[in-house]
Length: 414
Image (cartoon, one colour):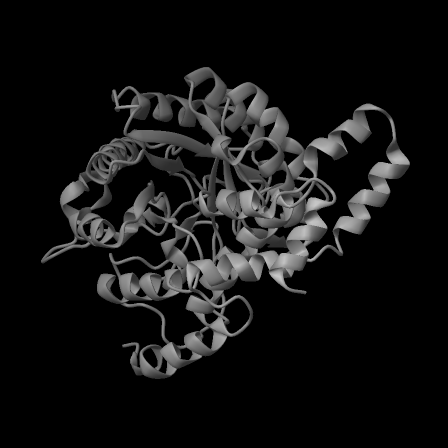
């Protein structure tokens, strides 16, 4: 179906496709740098540890900041719209000597800021509380050792200063997400103590009077991780309570709950009480929380809630890592899937459906919800991509495969 025909079809149910195309273009998604190198960073040759694990050995992963920036640039060239880039603290650029995490400063991230300015990207940030000798026992801000806690407190404060730097230089507030993998493999004898220590450590971090106009702190929970299956200190309840008390935002990650939970159902409550929702889009499969997102029911429900409650009220970022497939393709596929589901939600007569619900006309609501699944969304998506000068269908994969032949395949790991 042509775009003009699709436009008419949607108009009959009160949906303006031109308005939807303009709206989706304005929704930035923060693309996570760590998909490009399996969450390794540039501090050592070791892989990720501390409750997370990347599986697979697909060739061509980025080995240097220059390669990672090039891969991100290429991925962005195949994604419509304007987006953000999300960095972890372990991705600092170290000249001669590795600067330890408690002493990180804007100097290690100046190359990222210069690159972002040239490309027109805004940056988001994350302290890295894993893959470090002082996180080897699985405890950071909740560690019983005061010296270890002090190290990670200094890291948190250093990262707040870097986030301020990003916000100031790029003239866009930087979201900085705190996720700590602390926990125990087997059932603990003391659940309260670690949480008290973590709260005290977070208090010390947030005593730093960061500029709220430049950075937006977020606190992320997790159900469990590899090696911390029985107990995580920063549970959902801990994060919600601490964030509300501290006046910061709690972050929802789609992969950090029981598989039977509907994460989309939590969004409206978060918006009511926090005023804004920070959201990591990922896909859980059994015990792993970070598969490349697909256009499944979970993603669709999340996108519908985002659109119904206003995308301007959300901080949207992707979070997954898969080394079993082409890493650039994983970025492009995930970003485009997120945008597709957001656009589908924008092409829904949401006000009309709400009216049917409020009036108790549930038969009509159900029928309309189902019929919408067969409306010509693809034609509107294709028009959006045409205007953004990127491929609409799977043709983008050919460009990625050429990039793999010309660039990625030439990279040899030591």
